[in-house]
Length: 293
Ligand SMILES: Cc1cc2nc3c(=O)[nH]c(=O)nc-3n(C[C@H](O)[C@H](O)[C@H](O)COP(=O)(O)OP(=O)(O)OC[C@H]3O[C@@H](n4cnc5c(N)ncnc54)[C@H](O)[C@@H]3O)c2cc1C
Ligand code: SF4
Image (cartoon, rainbow, N blue to C red):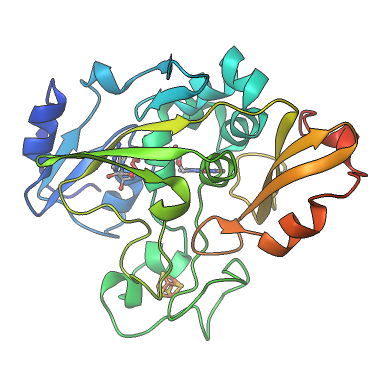
């Protein structure tokens, strides 16, 4: 059962920032992750601030210089089915299409997708672990075969988002607003490791919210793809995934950006693999850009 809280549905960004600033307030976008957390007592809220009245945070627009601005409230379905995203940012379209189920993609937003909380079952369950402010990581001696293989330190979550690795590989940035103004952060700088902050997955400060993600124009010869392995054929988080963005000159790889999902507490760049691809002939070139099977 959901606990008691007050509910606000502001009609403007300024109003939302006003309501979202006090301690104890949480933001509600599509609610597909948040409501489960509140219902299961993962964290509590005195006030839930719905973003659903903020029309300015919806939709996909041109940046004017070849890139796209994707409002934080744009749904995963809208992203997966947008023609311009499918054409230029295949990895993002495929990542959005691979998340959750059709119903959840209709409701779930891109802002909520990158800000969703970890799925570690101790964190989601009745365990006061380190990430909740306790003194133990129950996964170390417990059920940990879905936990991270890179980047763990004290806490061993994997970041659950499918779209975040694709956005990072595409060189996207995040626009963040607060009552004191706005700032833009590269997606690569948005997420944090447990060694830097064991209680949070990203750099958002209290009172800040994501207003949009911005994907830059893609250079000629660029193709991208997102592949995801999961326990079940569908409706499941990534056991491991890869967002690959490759700039080709004929059969030669000029540049590669490879970001893994499901293996680390944040989207994880495979730097050595990027280096070994760059400058070489791409033997997998024909598969890049095709739809995932
Ligand atoms: C059964 C199931 C399967 C799922 N499978 C997948 C999957 O395969 N891949 C995947 O990536 N996700 C999956 N999800 C997670 C989730 O549904 C999606 O990530 C969805 O996109 C979350 O968006 P939302 O708008 O519903 O977020 P919400 O639930 O509204 O919010 C999630 C969190 O982000 C915060 N938040 C939301 N919007 C903002 C904002 N603009 N600025 C700052 N903070 C914000 C909220 O406060 C909350 O803490 C799954 C969920 C379920 C229940
Ligand atoms: S992995 Fe992190 S979230 Fe999971 S039990 Fe350990 S400290 Fe908690």
